[in-house]
Length: 637
Ligand SMILES: Nc1nc2c(ncn2[C@@H]2O[C@H](COP(=O)(O)OP(=O)(O)OP(=O)(O)O)[C@@H](O)[C@H]2O)c(=O)[nH]1
Ligand SMILES: [Mg+2]
Image 1 (cartoon, rainbow, N blue to C red):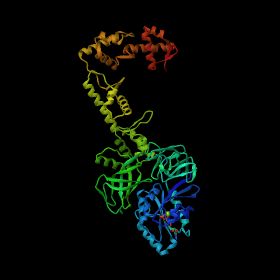
Image 2 (cartoon, rainbow, N blue to C red; image 1 turned 30 degrees about the vertical axis):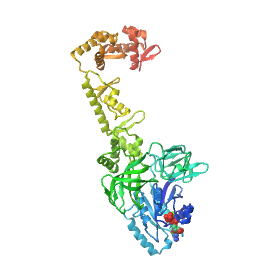
Image 3 (cartoon, protein in one colour; image 1 turned 60 degrees about the horizontal axis):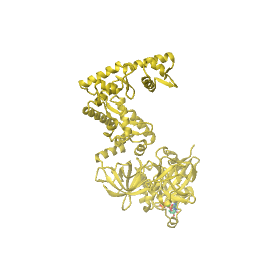
Image 4 (cartoon, rainbow, N blue to C red; image 1 turned 90 degrees about the horizontal axis):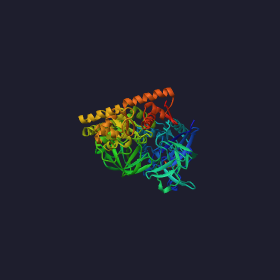
């Protein structure tokens, strides 16, 4: 069985014994800095690990509890699977106990337990009182009913129980879905002599291999992975959910920071704004006014932002709304990512939510439309969400990768929805050699209708012309790119709504209307070709003899071809369709009897000169009736 990696984070008020507990569990002292030692507090994130069994490995992130380091704590808990909320039995619930719990809730940490530390310092009845208090504190949160384990890191009491409870919780953690867009929010950057810059973090999604080309966002600095370590072991590949150290040659340590994102070029993309849902905590000290300036935390990054409330002027504690977050520095998200906001001053956690649109359009949009769009992304079924994204993309086919970044769905659900939407005719897949993307059927149909009406208009204006040149038609539909335009034409032709002849397009029902004079020319041409047998005159000669010189004559002649009255052999050489069929029949009969035919043989068969025999044979080759073998032709099949 493969080793399961689970990331555990500590949380809790300053001095409640988080670091001491990690040390008691793992033997690793995560307070490494001189300043941490001197002041007796954690300042930076600490990292430890614990092999619970042969197939279960815990990566542990120890966070600082000091109120000034909540932003460091936020950078640490972004990728955790489990939280150990540390509460000292002698002090009970304190401000950062509360704030850290709120943060875990806002980030939707799914499970965890409470370590009631320092039990060696309190009397049993005091401990009972604190426990009773806890019940009220945890009620309604994801930790309601979670195990509360009394421990002492000094005496070691309760550690086996804690280990057992961690194991049980860790076994219940669903492995992170593999696949998806690779990203690793960077929480540490340092150098190793001889190797250069190394970044660490928990992989949020996707996988990373040695040799992969990566970029650091938002700076977009490129590098290639030279070495990878997972929990201290050198590996070839690292997976979602693993704490990973990545050696990035060519990057200087001061070019990369905590808060940057390691990703592949293309997706995700950085943005200066997000559309999101926003919950204001019940405990928030006051209502949030639209355009308020806040601290915005996403992954390991922090930036200032303004919250523009989309459907109200202020958001009261405990309420939820849709918001446009205008950032003061670029950040990078995928749909569905959770974020946290803190008030600017005093810095206090007040709310958070889900990114709904990680790359909202820059242009001004009608508020009602934005709201409708976001409501579907927030609460719609996966099918409705995908459909919504297709509608939003309009005539720009949206590629699979872009959908992966904008839909908060895993790859399998996304593919299932796309297939279903295509099969039920809600979306169109623009295939081809390279997949071009998807477009909503409504948009597709609107463009198809526009093509038809453009053609109708053209035929009204130019009743004699047999069609509109493709390129001219295309310039009338600039919204549709070349690939989409080609797809539309092909589709309309297949449905017999239009006909395409060479470079010209016409409405399927369009017949150029001829005057009696033109009708007469057409009649004479037909007669001429019918009586010419296998040896028709040159087109120019025919036209002038029929009295149809000039452009009009050519148009009339093309009509004959469109109607199938004459069949093109090459350039200006056409056969009347009766003679064409006759030549074909004679050739087939001959080849059935003789197996092959030469050019002289064919000349004799039809009684024509080389001038006609060769183009005819070449035509039959091209329509795969015959096949050339040296000097002879045989039946194709
Ligand atoms: N008696 C007793 N003291 C403890 C216990 N756990 C921790 N301590 C002491 O409490 C103090 C703070 O412990 P830390 O582990 O540094 O606390 P912390 O939660 O990591 O603090 P920050 O990281 O600064 O938030 C230290 O002096 C520890 O020795 C315990 O179970 N019993
Ligand atoms: Mg500590």
